[in-house]
Image (cartoon, rainbow, N blue to C red; front, side, top):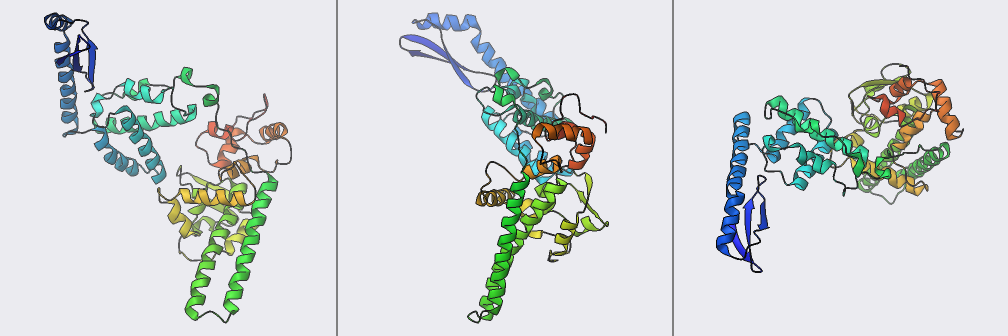
Length: 399
């Protein structure tokens, strides 16, 4: 505690339980009177109590963890815990990014887990100044709850403060409450993508044939040129297969990039263990996709697309595939859509040609939410409802 004079008035500064220094005015110009006010207010005792409270939380933390554990130090064992539970690298990375941002923004990196209160969580999740929507806040809260599940499983905390925190909808605008809308690719857009990729593949094929027959190349120069063209050919063919596959089966980009030859071992089927949910899903293998699979050279004994699998498996590089696809879309004049929109095309099935209201009604009459959930490999039917919104009163909810 310190007493200082400013503008003729004495101020007292002290440390709070969070370790921050606060200053308030005694409203006294005489030092003796200022000291008397400080003594009567009990500031010194409260400061000592705050320090003792902080020390006691650290002692409890050391007793529970066996060392001086802080939130920042807990991140790495938390990542190992997530990995041991079979969580995908992307999931672990996304959780880590959220938790690191939370700790940094709330300035609690040095806090032991036992010192975290509900206000440390609610103050960040329900910050009215943040532009995050309702869905993003729910996801962030889920990440924090997973961290405290890890703490509880290790006995590092006796209670989970995140369970007392919810989304404060009063701080959200209308747009923040609305779920993000993704429009499926139209049949015309899918045809444009397919036509562009096929045309580019044809040009690459002609270039490769020209290089093979050209006399101006040395053997080494020809091999280098062909390898470069072959790499471009493989990339274009991957995207052609990915667009056609996802728009008919609804598979995610990560699942297509990770396809194994074993996925086609059952006649007439494509069987996939999904990267995100580790669920088994199977789809009929269309003649078009079957023909395309036979055109893929076996460059890897396990994977169809080893290069794309390597990229998608690296949490620091996986966004490269999304960037590649965005550029392809821009070249054919398609804006505002991501690869994920091909999954929405699959959800709409063969009913693209009718308007949206009729489409929703037709799907609701033809498929139950459970069937759509199975088709897309969703863990929750609520996720499926965002893809196809049934007309009022016509939804079939049976599984």
